[in-house]
Length: 457
Image (cartoon, rainbow, N blue to C red; front, top):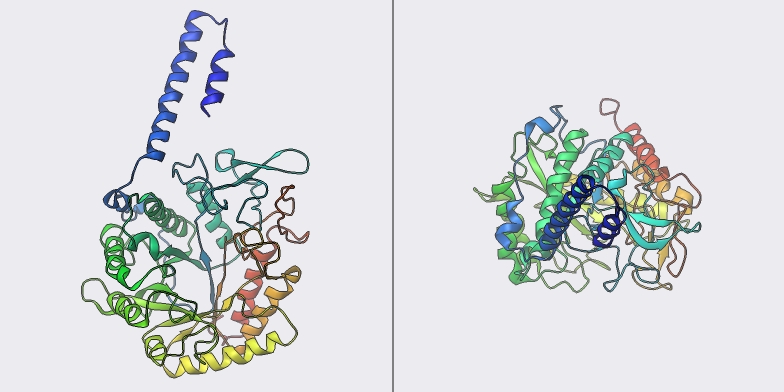
């Protein structure tokens, strides 16, 4: 950017003194601005500063429409919001686009490329990748207000009722020299809250416990208290979009009972659940637990510990993680129906809402290796049949994984078929329109609602 300013300066050689003075003034102003951005992007961020960006909602900017509470007849999606780009002010580079610190042909961590044709110029960030015609390939930043608002507009247009905004516990539970990433995770929450309300969508926080240890839970509790104190999460009367269940705000906790080498136990997980659910000062929340697919059997991806069922019984909602647990084979869909039916029966006996996870496909070849496993989308048939199985099983809501996760190829938002060429190979939507999977979400929601009692439709 500095190089562009200097070139711009020399282009005006020979102008009159007054015009040249004006140009110099413009250039100096630009240099001051970019210097400020550079300093901000490279300065250390304290924990206090990281939380200072959290504020309650501003009523004038948000919708005043009253939203219905509960989950019946609704579909939700997981929203990562973790993509960053140089120039977005975060100083985090191409976070979640890059691999091993590089985002260039031959080194990236995304398998899909976003369709940003309708984005404004200020939302587009240039990359070293090139399209077949030689033009520069651009990406977006999840920190741009227009982009986040656009994503929630798509949710509204395609009748996705809301989003569970992901918050990785590792950012708030670890003591860091630089809390820059925590700061912009906090900013992401504010942007999502505002966008959800402007577009009459629900939103809720979902903690992902991946990466933390038992000793981190005390600091994670402080993270929660900061969210409650500073942005009044779940209790802000001006935040009409925050999702309510059983008369209480709903919060998700993902990563309970997985048998994948996690360094925290069920005891600490239960302690954190009780803080959010029962504590007289910091509780009062309804709880969604993200659990293993085989949670009921306590087998395969789930720990074989009777405490798991006791902890799950504390939940108001459970959502078993299905990504990678089936791949669209002929017998898979009947198994989905039977498993959802049995899971729901267990939950109904304990008055727990059951929210199955549905996903469009899976691929992480650029993140892992070209030989890594993938689950083909089958031009949308794989996704659509999961909705059919869900409606047959009698499930009354669904969680779509994920809205924007290009890293693992599960994104349902608009992605392009005109991907960059070169050393990195990208998946496409197989020539289908970029909004094809958003349309399948809309159609799937209709399937679920039509299978419910007439008074719920």
